[in-house]
Amino acid sequence: MRRNLAAVVRGLVIAAGLVALATGLVGAAEPYQQTRAFHRVVECEQQRSGNCFDSEPGSIVGRRIYTTTSTHTDAEGHTWTTTHTHYEITWQRADGRRQARDVTSAFYRAVGEGTAATLRLWRDEVVGIEAAGLSHWFVPESGHRLSGWLHLAWLGTGVLLWGLFGWWDGLFMLGFRVLAWMFMSIMPVWGAISVLAYGWSSGAEVVVQVVFGVLFTGVSAAMLIASLFFADW
Image (tube, rainbow, N blue to C red; front, side, top):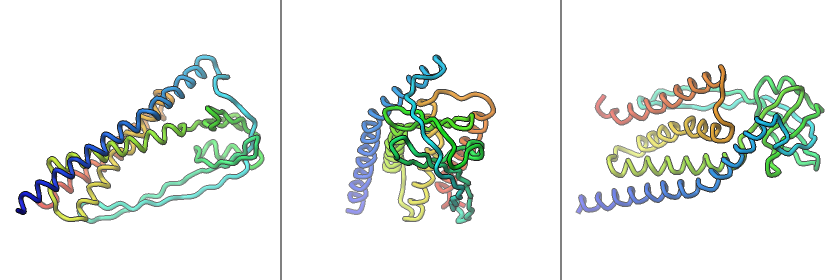
C-alpha cells in the first residue's frame, strides 16, 4: 500500500513538473517574439545612428539612493548577508506620467532634479533615457515577462527531475533546494534576455558581468549539490 502511494505521489510530481515546464515554454513564445522585434529596432538604431526609436522630451523629477539586503543560508545552516546599493531616478513624461527606474551610479551622479532629458520610446514604453550627455537603456517590458515564463519553465524542469530521481528528506531541505535551483537560473536567464534585446556587449563591462554571473550561478549550484549529499556528511 505504502509503495503504491509513493508511486502515485511520484507520478503526480512528474505530471506537475511537465505542466509547469510546458506552460512556461508556451507562455514565453509571445514575449520572446516581441523582444526579438525590439532587438531589430536596436540594430536599426545602431546602423543608422538614431531615429529608429521614438523620442519625446522629459525631465528628471526625483532621485534617491537605497539599499537592499539579502540573507542566504547554505546546506550546513551557515548564514550570510549581502547588501546591494540602488541608484534610482524618476522622470516625468510630456503628458505628466512619472516612472522610477534604477540606473548606473555614473548616470545617477550626472543628473539632478530638473535636468532635461530625452526619453526613447518603443511602443509607447520608455526604454532609454538620455541626459547630461549620457544615456541609459532598459530591457523592455516584454523581456521581463519572458523572464517570468522562463523561470516557470526552469522550476518545472526542477520539479520534473525531483519526481524522476529525487527523494523526501524533509520540508526544510526541499525548500532549500528549490531556492538554490531557482537562484541558479537568475543570471543565465537575465543574461540571455539582455543579449536577446541588445545583442552582445563588448569591453570590460561584459567581462565583469560574465565573471559575476558565473560566480553567482556557481555558488547556487554548489549549495544545491552540497544539499544533495548533506545526509552523508
